[in-house]
Image 1 (cartoon, helix red, strand yellow):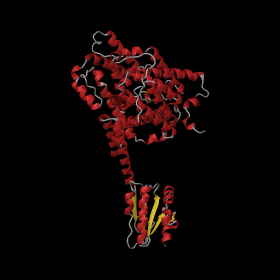
Image 2 (image 1 turned 180 degrees about the vertical axis):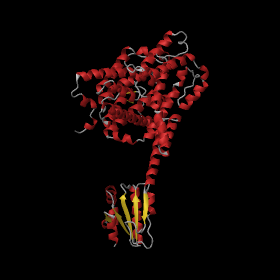
Image 3 (image 1 turned 45 degrees about the vertical axis):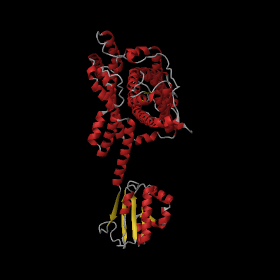
Length: 544
């Protein structure tokens, strides 16, 4: 049926839905909501926005993506991958700029799904995703040092870039608070040690409760530790979004397109990667195009609800699957539970200490860094792949993700073309008595092309030469599986040169794709259909 490739997974899983599965989805949804609550607040703060924006995002994007998405168990919401991007946009272009960029990204994602581009995401090199993921982890870690140590920046100091934050931390080290460090250290120890003994209750929730109780009841700690409520407004109830300052002028859209493109690509990569992980856990198969459309709709809904960019969250998705969630109902329940928290319990978030938030984000950064994978690539991969990964990592930390992805893709493309070009060889066959070409006449030259002919290797075609004694020039193309227009131009030049020299050009074993291109370009007609033969021996017989 037309449009069925965009059919949400909810529609197929709801058939035969049982009360038993409903109970499992309810439990999984509630557990995921408990996990998502402190993380959403922490990631909103790391993104440079109000803490409530993280909850708004998890509610709106979480509900829409589960309802319209192509995965059984995907959980969407704010993620660490977006933190540095969002913080940069908010710092330079404000919340109105973030609104426009996210809406544009949502439209891009919807179009990517409609035009069936979900499968193309797999062509983004693994080294690039590893590089920028590790880079984002480092930027998140550095960004939380201030709150973990209780530092106070000088008036007017508002660092945006990672290097600026390092400099600001060094300059303000004299304002270090031992109280903040103590609370942060205790919470970090809980986050590291607690999961080794107990897995049913999220460690981040335990850390939040312990941190708040320490500041509330231990004498002397409250004076050196900032809480969320002291730094941010904690609203209760539905968000009130002001649309009056939103600028959708062409000039503003043009300025925000690079940011929107980065949000869209990152949302697509992370959400589909999360879907793949989820598929393995629940023995299912996701619909990538439906997922992209859902991610686009979810991001647009998120900013209209007062939130920030969202994507599939691998850790929350895995928690959903591990706790029995098997349909999108669990993700929708997770969003509803967070909505109830927003309506009735949100002011209690103001009691959470900032060092606790920093400790949670330290663990988020560590888990997403996947440093073991980074090290393994450095040890085992070709030098070109290592270069792409390290450059992408470095640019993510020093500049931003937009530059890192652009440069990483260009490097990967150029190095891939170089590698493919090196694989293409032009072999001049000699009259060897032991070869299959033994006994051929002196006026016949045979060249075998081994590998694809494209713009990166077309410069090797001029290596095919004929002298004044040559009457027949045979191109053996059994190992050429593809040609492009640049290579065709070089072959046409070779044919013209042969005609001027009175040399008959013969091609043997031309495969399907090259033959199709040669016919379309008129090359077969120019050379003569009789000069295309299926085997090298047919070519030699033609010369006789």
